[in-house]
Each structure stands twice: as structure tokens, then as C-alpha cells.
Length: 168
Image: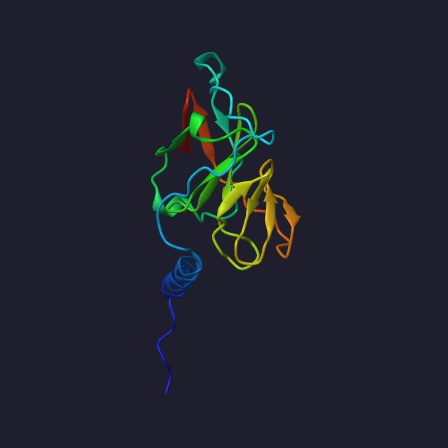
């Protein structure tokens, strides 16, 4: 007796569903996490860049499309004033973390830890922190500062225009 061939779409759909279930199971609920750091000196962040400084900034695309599925392209994630200089903010629903390593420079990364797919929970002291096993990633480039993770957080695409940060 022979079985019907498995179609590629069926396999891809099953794999995507399993991945989504794994990522959802590692999270701690929905909603946005509050911004968790001020600048490294502990002072409040300076005012956002002026419109004259608002040339569009694009952050490199990631190999992973982990966050793009839950929010439409072009949707506003935050205002620039919401992202502290030297820190960042986690958007749990979109599975993205947006950082501002230096005043006026914005980056975005997947908020899914590369160690065991837990959702990162805080941004503090220049690192993006995973609560599951203690991995820490640098806000400037998503690289690993402390393991057990061995791979950096994948970059995500955003644009910054004026005081608006949007998915690219």
C-alpha cells in the first residue's frame, strides 16, 4: 500500500505552526513591555531629534521574518522619544526590540533569544536581556555579550522619519 505524497505546502505549514507554537510557549504573555532603561549615566534621555535631523534611517533586514507577521509593514511601533538613549524598548506582540545605542541612532532586532527562543524581557545597562538562561545581547548590534546564546539577535527592518519609528 502506498500513501499519498506529502505536498511541500503541507510540510511548510506544519513547520510554521510548530515554530509559532514554540515561540508563543516561551513568551510570558502579550502586550508591550515598558521601556526599561535610561541612558547609561542614569539621566533622562535628551529630547528627540529635530525634524531637520529626520532623514529616514533603515536598519538591515534580518534573515528571520519572526516579527513581521504580526504587524503590517509601515505600522508605527513607537515615537523616538519612547526609546531611551543607550537603552531600548521591547514590543512583545511584534517580537521586536528597538534600541537607541547613541542619541539619534535607532536599531531593531528580533526579540526572540537565539539560545532557546525565549522572548527577551528587559533592556538595561546597554544590553538586551533574556530571562530564561541569562543571555545578554548588545543594544548597538545585537551581538552576544554573555551566553549561553552563541548567535546574535537577527536585525529587523525599521524606518525613522521625524519622530516616528515604523516597520519597514
